[in-house]
Amino acid sequence: MRISGGTLKGRPVKVPPGIIRPSMDRMRESVFGALGDLGGASFLDIFSGTGIIALEAASRGAAYVEAVEMDSRKRDTLIANVSISPVRIHCRFMAAELYVRRAKRNFDYIFCDPPFPYRFKWQLAADIAASALARDGTLILLHRPREDFFDGEIPFIRKSPPREFGRSIVEFLRVDKPAE
Image (cartoon, rainbow, N blue to C red):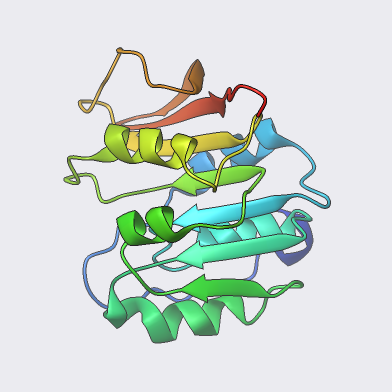
């Protein structure tokens, strides 16, 4: 697996032991192409795994990047992978739900890539939008399997057309919070 764009384009990324579903090259290129220049942006990668998404963001100019991963078997690989980043990638090792509840910093972009069997994707997106992680205008990118569809309303979220990659879908969810 290699980084698909930016200053680190072509650099290899190690894969940790255990169950992993690395993000497809085509999906990463398309999503980051849609985002454009991340110069100066803040970026959060939840369910980080290898750290490839955090690295893609840093490679494309994000100024502040965090990666959240719960699986301790991925810790050493994630730390080794993010060490090649041009900016420090802050790694947090805890459950995504706990991280969201404890959040104090907000982000411009939040990429959420839970395991496909994870049943609480849409609730987690709602929790992120309502948390301190998101401010008005934050873009949540939710990677999900095609069959895990939800067409209801989510508080504080405005949906944009998703991107489809075979069985994978990336939802573009814009946070729309009222002024405080």
